[in-house]
Amino acid sequence: MTLRKFLPLFAAFLCSLFITIGCGQAPNIATPPNGDNNADPIVIGYSNWAGWWPWAIAEEEGLFAANGANVQLKWFDGYLDSMNAFAAGQLDGNCQTLNDTISFAADAVNGEVVVLVNDNSAGNDKIIVKQDINTVEDLVGKQVAVEEGVVGDFLLTLALEEKGLKREDVVIVPLETGAATAAFAAGKVDAVGAFPPYWLTALEREGSKELINSAAFPGAIPDLLVVSQQLIDTQPDQVQALVNTWFDILAFMDANPQRADEIMAKQAGVTIDQLQLLKQGTRFFTLAENLEAFSPGNNMKHMPFAAEKMSKFMVDVGFIPEGPDLTQLFNDSFVKTYAQSQSQ
Image (cartoon, rainbow, N blue to C red; front, side, top):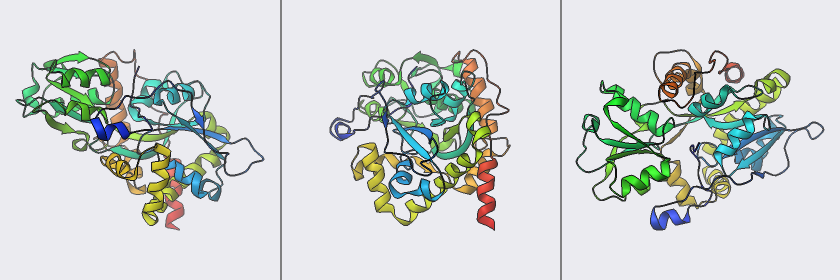
């Protein structure tokens, strides 16, 4: 299964608008943990996505230690590797999307619980179409290449449903995202669902254009900090320290944008200019947006609603055999505790 993942090097992207995705490499362990060195650190995985690069700021600027978080960050070049490691109990927490958390929830040996929203995809996921397709309705009967069950497929489904259509109204061509964009660029299909940098390759096709992107569906593709239920049960203070640290990271980014960008660019292996490009379409979540995301509601801005919709979608397309128990998937107590501390 190939999911959203990114290479740490993007130089070739500026030259040719094509990047080969790096995966399956052994993870690199970050520098020694911050915090109380008398206890074993909690190990948090993260990988190359713009919404997760800021964790490197906490390490570089001592923000973990300032919040009493005894953390060892573990960097993964392959996003899928990080999810497999977390599900197998080799990590205490990991950075991953909501749909991927649902995919792995049933198999996670120590449980998986969402405690924080880092960001939302706000345009980074797109449906790219050929020249004569101008509306979502024009997709009916057309061949659309997507990697089944992942974010591009989900975005396509949302776009169709908004217009009263169904996924079955288009001809799904199931391909891994890189192969899907290559097929579109070669003129073999009519449209493609993709995330960066793949949609850049899709746009190389003459006359191609963006039809819709994830900004049209706020909350549909959230990127999260997920920890094990075991960690919550045994070290809730460390989970709270992690959440507190994240909001200190955001404050640091606001107060020190140049230094923050330098740290993130170094961690991602990109230039500052490339960093700015890849930050576009990524919306970091404020405290208020976190509280809203965890709350019940009837639209995609509310994660409980979004999770039900995603779970049904993945079952319907055969990506997972059955939906997991979602009743214990979210724990908003740590974000709420932080909010209370700020109101005092």
